[in-house]
Image 1 (tube, rainbow, N blue to C red):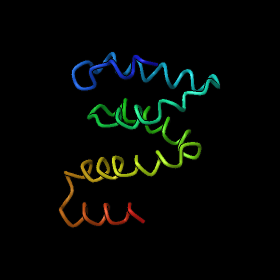
Image 2: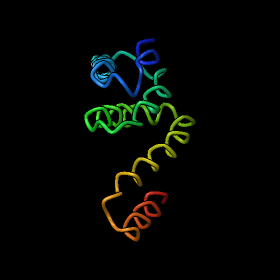
Image 3: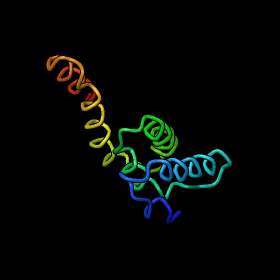
Amino acid sequence: MQLLRTVNMDKDSKRKRDVIKKVIAYMTLGIDVSRLFADMTLACNTKDLVIKKMVYLYLCAYAQSNAELTLLAINTLQKDWCVAGRGRSRADRAAACTHSRH
């Protein structure tokens, strides 16, 4: 899956979606795509909600088999969680970020 690394993550959202869709399709067919865990974690750094949902589906499926990488991914996911709450008050965002760490 060299495609995931070569897709320009910011500029070509449609191509990125297609590549991640293929990863999810392979995953649902039972093909081991766990070696893409780090690349998929980086792919969740996007504003595209469809991509985020597909990446989160992947991360949930492979989190237990990649315990060390999962710990590294937590920081990215917490950052995403806190940024997603921008429309809320500062107190609500702080509470959500604090709660997500436990």
